[in-house]
Every structure is written in structure tokens, then in C-alpha cells.
Length: 260
Image (cartoon, rainbow, N blue to C red; front, side, top):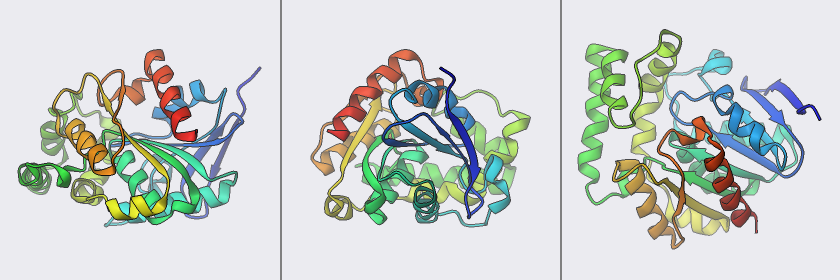
């Protein structure tokens, strides 16, 4: 049977794609991930879920709506509006990296549209015992961007995630991230009390290949603060975009736990 796919643009100018049937599942990519970058993951899950992917405000197909200040609350409000338009919620949410941070902001500020969240390696460095070190790292990259440009900032950042070279096609996307989002992503501290009041299951997840990278340690600390288990998923920080079969199978299990 052919995959059921529908493309659209929200009233806020956010481009999105819906696949499949079943309970609504929202996938929020991190960094300069797009709706298309989560295509393989979405396609694999569309046999069980109605999967919603989108381009964040300011990126890719949603680029016309960029502003100078893209806070996590602003992104969460965009997602809440998109979920209202699409209907069929509340949504189960999977987010990775910056997408996981947006997922945390969404459940803290708009719990009524969320069924539960799997937060894969959110870089919530403010929770770490050595938070000052990582705040300095974020400031260093911000300064590199302002003084030397997007290439220098990207090179410093990519060294922490095993990323490749900066492609011409994505240079604009990295520029938006460093100019409008970077400080908000790295400066976001989850409101643990608000997450508890929301009454939704929030499961931090870590890649087994991520070692002691700051985003992996942050996921572990977040799990401890929430009093929940830390889910372990195959691969490293970019595994959701690579969406190998092993990762998808493991993620299905965590999503089923959150639903149940």
C-alpha cells in the first residue's frame, strides 16, 4: 500500500508533512534538521502512527518567517499552533537535541497538546554540575560566529558531535541557528516543577555511542531530576536522522512505554 502523505503550511508559515494513520506522533529535529531529514524515521513509524514533521520557524521551507530572536518558548508556541491546526492530538512527541529542548518547553508551557515526550540528548547544560564550563563553551561559539563567521562557529560546534564539513546548501541554516537560536538552546533550563505539574510522561534518552558528551550527561541529569529512568537508544547524537532499523525498533519500545 502506498504511503499516505499530506503536505501543508500552517497559519504561522510553518511547513509540515503528515504521514500514516494512528495516534499523532510529532518529530522535532535538532540543529539544522528539517522535515525531510526525518523522512526515513517518519516513514518507518508511519505504519503505527500519524507522523507529523515540520521545518522550524526560520529554516528551510519555513524560512520566510525568520526573526532575530527565536526562543524555545516561541518555537513551542509555533508547535502548539501547528498541533491545533492539524488536529488529532494530544500528540506523542519525540525530539532530539534542540528538538528535545523544544519538546521540553512544549510540555512545560502547553501540556494540553502533549500526550508524552521522549527527549533525546537535550543539551540542557544548565543542569550539569559543570554548567559554567558549558555556558562558556556556548559563549565561545557565539563569539566565534560574531567575529569570524558561521564557518568558524560551525567547525567548533561540529567537533562535539562528529559532524562533517559545512555544506553550501546548509550555510544559511547554520547562520540562522547561530544568529537566532544558539543562545536560547544552550541557555534553556527545564522548569522541573512545571514538567511535574503537567502530569505527562517525559523520558530523557541517550545514545549508547555518545559517551560522556555534554548532551548525553545532561539527559542523565534530567532523568534524575524528573525521577524517571534514562532510555538508552542505539547510535550517537545523529542517530535519529540516520534512523537505522535498530534505532527505530528501540524507539518504538520507548514510545510504547510513554503511551502506556
